[in-house]
Length: 417
Ligand code: RNT
Ligand code: ZN
Image (cartoon, rainbow, N blue to C red; front, side, top):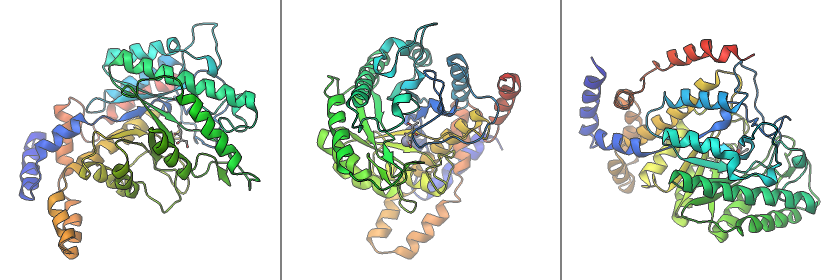
């Protein structure tokens, strides 16, 4: 059977439970995911040579890490070729590209240091998102935006302000909004003597960053919370309560990362509450394994549940979804492709659920039937619809994309020594 014949048979099966596969495909093709640039080089960036800091960690040393802007761009191109649909690229400030011999510190970066990324995005017709980088820097060895050292705090405030300007430049150049996410690693290893002081300073620093004029239709500033980091186990300044309250009061967006909560808490359950009180919401999809380990996103239950929440709450245009993982133990191109395609598959799976029926069952108290149908839907032929989606988007379906990754590994990645 051809991919199309399989699709037509799947289409019939879904139609029998009231699901329109054609509509699902149209919605899926409009849903763009913000792909993190930092999977390609283990979150190193180009503006410094020190180790990754901030309580986050990449593990593994699989060969082929991108070491220059040219290599990273070539790798991203390779990934984009294997993804159906149009996506955005998510940059960190540490990926600034300087002219030969030039170097400016993080508080002095300007749009021109990202010109080559803008050209890259323009040529590929994609948008850019942005993140100030408050880690991997000598001034980030202790606290940053919450520091009691006023000089250090002001340095990072200037960095945040510079990033707002760069985000606006991205939005203007590319004709689509730029999501700018603020995450700071600030925290303490052991029991603090003062929890309020750092939070009060963080609050003031954010106020100062947001005092830079910017167009709210073009730049969506988000604040990402966290529960703990490595070496910062006892106290995190930007906790969930801090971030959700700050964002709500100041009219910016909350960003929830799937690895930033206590281990039995799930982001999927938080989405509906956030959407009731916020016009827009931002997510970092990652995979925590026992801790905020940032493993490659799988087609697993929680990813599907997140996708279902976005779809059934009719929020595909209210949620900014970005990927955030970094695995250095496997081929990085494959890690990117697997995670991105899994997120898209989860969205497709979610688009193919018979919600009206399922909701009616819940409302009627028919929990036996509800459980039965939710379970049966798991084995409906979502793969046939997925492969057809890949085919009409001109990218390889099934595992067929992997041959290209192998070729690229042999011809390009393995030569990077
Ligand atoms: C860290 C946060 C943050 C980073 C990226 C690199 O725990 O999740 O989003 O992973 O900014
Ligand atoms: Zn994150």
